[in-house]
Image 1 (spheres, rainbow, N blue to C red):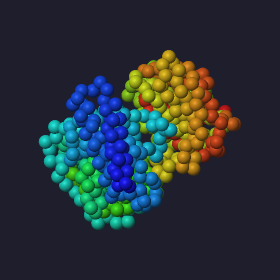
Image 2 (cartoon, rainbow, N blue to C red):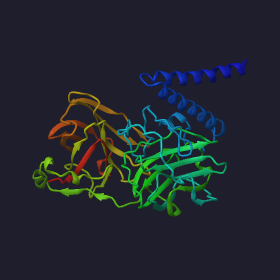
Image 3 (tube, rainbow, N blue to C red):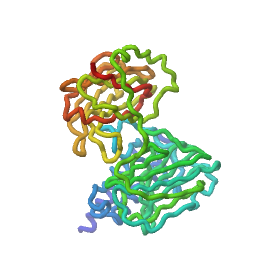
Image 4 (cartoon, rainbow, N blue to C red):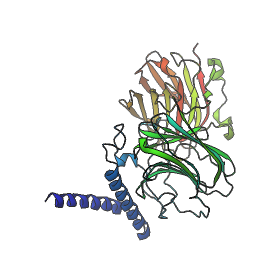
Length: 436
């Protein structure tokens, strides 16, 4: 009876998954619907293999739960060696970032799919590092090389002794996106393709990819900028081989231990007097080329204390979802900084009403969220001036000189050392106004 009950439950889960997929296929053609069913079948197979060979008890050496629905939060369209040739249509979410919004403030559109006209030798192994030992948090793999002029895609793989792939990092140059995935017994999991960072790999140019191992995820840096994170699905301590495949040359791999990530030169936030702030030119006079790279990270020259104001001059994108501004204790992604103030405007409403969320990140978790539904001057394609003023008891947020939100201190504001901005805006300038 126990066996029959187990079979019934297993079949019931499969039927529920397939039924949910069919319900989501409303309005799609039969070919598209069949593709979605194939993706669901592949994912169910992957989850079964993951549970069989890497049960929760040993998958992450006790560091984090191995819930595949959390770790595999993006739709799969097949990975480099296993393309079914069908685009994904379900929503794609980012793997949880080390510096991220409460609800993933920025999302890319769905993956363009895995259809490729790649005729190159993209599966040829061009570099291998074997006998990797003592993989632990803080270990960083630094892969450098040159992308060939004919390159369609290449990949960096971290493999276990049995051939399973703990991390598959796969830039696809014609589509301008990067796939992250893993493989168990020949079966690929769900792809992750979303990223807040623009694609910055180009044919004929040098590249540097850093992969940092932490207890929860891989952190990936591309050409000096943090790109994204990939939650562990397989036990990272069992990684023993790194291989590089595809149309790249002059490849080298270094290993080192890092105390903080990423290690790069950061912009100092410019300071100016109250008199100079009043004299700032209107945003409409700022040329498009003056926009800052996003996501933006700036280091404060002095503590952000009573009387100081942070000025953000920018423009909302034409199809905005949301953006956020963090006042945080360091400019690094890892170790995760404390976020003393997280401001997250969300543009889901119409008619000028937007949800303004405020929160803080302390002791490894988000705290109680505050939110308000306001009529604001945020509008698609329109410039804005956002101001965060530090008073004696709170941060006060003004938009175009109108107060829209306030956040009472939950920690000492002197701990703020950096500003992090991400989402659906273009940033022209970030300035700190000094106190009188």
